[in-house]
Image (cartoon, rainbow, N blue to C red; front, top):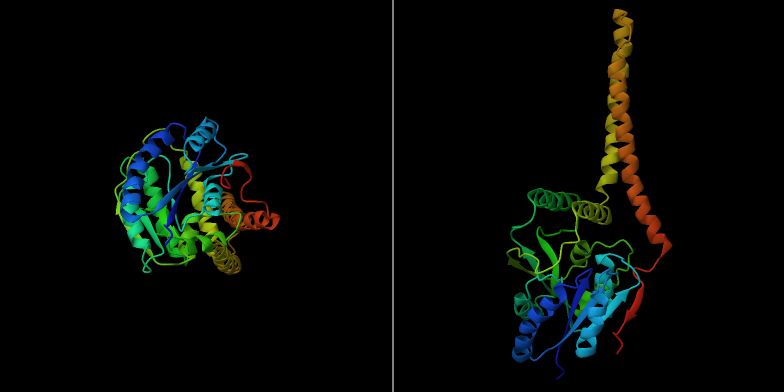
Length: 316
């Protein structure tokens, strides 16, 4: 009977300082798992156009360790593209997705494997139960995002869900079949279905380096998620248009009756300016919402590749 191969996919962007700590720590866990479960591992790093020495470091590790594989992008394509590339190149019977900064505890891997090696679960995923160490405003908006998207989308996204998870080969193949250009992995993981076991843990700090996710990047990412998995914003803009048309008809009738019955001239320059500005804002908001969906559709019709690889050793 062949031993199960577990592929560990690690997206990297300027993680030169974190990778040595990551490999040292995760090998402690994988060594124990090899002994206990009789499995093999491969470590697949995807360098997302790093500007430091991440690529050079990965080449060095790959020369010294046959279980270290890498994919180096031609430029920065984003974490979503790196995740897709890793899943596409992974050869394992089970595939793990985790970050290089050790905010995804390797100690959870044995529990994940015990969950997915049965037919009951196709995935075991990590969920943070707190956000200790994060800026309060960032935590506040993150929680609001999960509440909003779960109300307007039919795809449930668990609050605190991380990309960190172990998946069966059939689930990975299902994810790869969704080759859309505009990707939101948290939604895709949920949309494809399959039984998932959620494992809770407390937030941990980065082992080295700095986070690449600014508030603005997270905001744009949340917009991508809402647009990718809900059409509710389009319905809201249409609803606003109907409501405003109804209000305008009532106001027009009120002005006509008031003028004919009481001979009261229509006046009020300031109120008119406020109304014009308000309606203009609603119109621009609606156009902006429609523009987001149109832009995503436009990018999909171009059929550009999700990523371009400059170099890899996955065939060796």
